[in-house]
Amino acid sequence: MKKRKEQVERPVEKPSVKYDEVKPDGEKLQKVLARLGLGSRRKLEESIQAGEIRVNGKVAKLGDRVVTADKIKIKGHPVVLDDKIENRILLYHKPVGEVCSRKDPEGRATVFDGLPRLKSGRWVSVGRLDYNTSGLLLLTTDGELANALMHPSRQVEREYLVRVMGRVDDAMLSRLKTGVDLDDGPARFTDIQEGGSDSDGINRFFYVVLSEGRNREVRRLWESQGVTVSRLKRVRYGDVFIPSKLKKGQWMELGARDADVVYTMGQLEPKPVYQPPKKLADKRERQAQKSGKHIANRGKVRGK
Image (cartoon, rainbow, N blue to C red; front, side):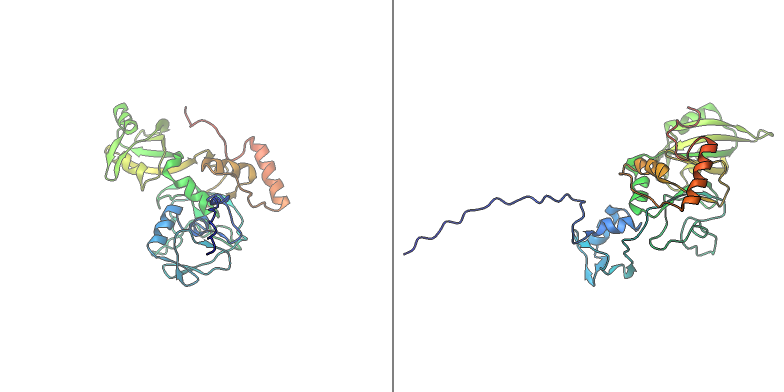
C-alpha cells in the first residue's frame, strides 16, 4: 500500500489591498453612491442591507463592487454612473424665498435653478437653509465631500448674523451659551457676539456660532427665550466666509487653493477640482489680489 502524502498547509496570504483602495473590478457600491451625493456611506449600507438596491437586476449585498457599465437601481429608480464627473465646489449667496430641495411641490424657486449646468453628475448642497434664511450655501459635485462636511463628528462651525426683536439681557445670552433644552435635545451657541442695533433700538443684531446643523436650530434657540428672529443670514461655514461683493442669487466657483481648504475642513485629502478657462481664471485671480484675500480664510471667529 502506498503511503499517503502529507499535505502541507500553506499560510493564507493576507490581501494587500486596503479597504477603500480601488481594484480593477471596481469600487465598493456604497462608496460610489455616496460620491454621487445619494447619501452617507452608513445610510447606503443600511439601504443595501434592507434590499433596496439592485445591481444588474440582483439584490445588492455589502461588499459588492461596481464599475461604470453596471446597472444600478435604488428603490426601483435607476442611477447613472459616470467616471467623467468633475469635482466642483460652488459658493452661493442664497436669497430669502428659495428652497434647498430640487423640486418644490408648491412651485417655489429652488437654489438649483440658477446653477451652472453639468455634463455629468449633479449638484449636492452642503446642508440646507430655511426658506426665510439667506446667506452662504456650499454646493459640490462631490457627494463624499458634502457628507463629510455635514457629519456631526466633524464639528464644522456655522456662523450666522441674526436680528432679534425683543428684550435681550446678559442672563439670556449666558443661558444660550450654556445650553437649553429643545424638543430634539439640548442645544447651545458656542459663541455670541454683539452686532449693533437698529436706530429705533427695537431690533438688536448678534453673530452666533453653532457646531451642528439641526433644523431651524438658530431660530428655535432664540424662541426658547421668548424673543423673535426677524432676520437670519449665514455668513460663514467652517473656514469659508461669504464675500461682501457676492450679491444675492449669485454663485462663485472655488479654485484649487480654496477647494483644498474645504476638503481639509471635511478631514479629506484634497482632490483636483474643475479649472475654468484661462481668461476666467485670470479674472478671478485679479479680483482676489485686489481684495487682498481669497474666499477661504483660516481666521478667527468674528469678535474673538
